[in-house]
Length: 363
Ligand SMILES: Cc1cc2nc3c(=O)[nH]c(=O)nc-3n(C[C@H](O)[C@H](O)[C@H](O)COP(=O)(O)O)c2cc1C
Image 1 (cartoon, helix red, strand yellow):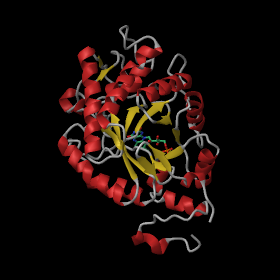
Image 2: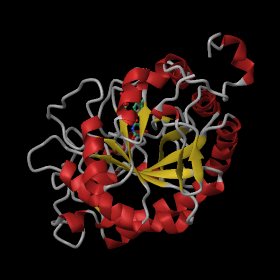
Image 3: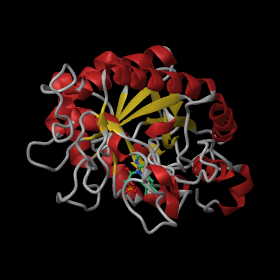
């Protein structure tokens, strides 16, 4: 049988991933009880991705505090009830041989929005309809959303503490790693980008100042999770806007974050401003991942319109990224990794035994 870069194991700190085909975090907006507690849908959704052969399954953006939720149907990791519900799901992911991660998130000025479906409304949910006051680096609205309140020093300290407490709870629930969400125009990205951060204190202005909150979160999360668990950061590598956050800033801050205790960088793009042109196409974010990997000398994953085994293999084999993450392709085919191995001629020893009769005869 052949070998493939995509199916080479990877070890970070105390954790070995069986391959480099990973499941990207994907919000399910499915907590109808509005309590942030993951339920059967999450067990089924994340469980099938693990059974499908992914090396790592990253649970969706889960809020570190109630006001950090994108919608009131988001999952959370700010209390023990949520943590014990996650523990059941993590156990199942582990039973299928995958590494379990969770994305820790605060939506900032993009919080308190309507769930993705079942509503005609867009933008911020008003207080009278269950919404809440949003916060950000500055009182600058995301287009079409209500104005946020700029966080003061105590508010910033609370955000750092909330990320650290959520990370400790995630590890307590059995997750092998946590990913800090600093992408897609959410709170940490709002601090990083000069388009959303107009502060004049030590959290605004220079790149160093704009990165201060993220680096404080990285240090606090590293302290909370100890030395054995990998810490990922997801960046949007560019705002695609003049005067905005860009791939050189991302590489610089990734280097600083690595020195502060982060191990791995999940490179996405966009989400902080509207009206920009994004060069969508197969693997369109791969050059951004390669840039961060090369300039900061850190391991990275690439994500975004990666849909075929050959494409995924080429990205990893050519050294552009150390792993790939898949979003929508895994929703279409949760067993993509098993199929990818077959197409690349790789024999896997981690088919679920219940499914062995479906294995391709030549594997
Ligand atoms: C249903 C859905 C939910 C998503 N939720 C998240 C999320 O929770 N956190 C995040 O960083 N990105 C999220 N994304 C973005 C994906 O992680 C991924 O970066 C994006 O879909 C591009 O990859 P793809 O072309 O393979 O889908 C989501 C995407 C989808 C389709």
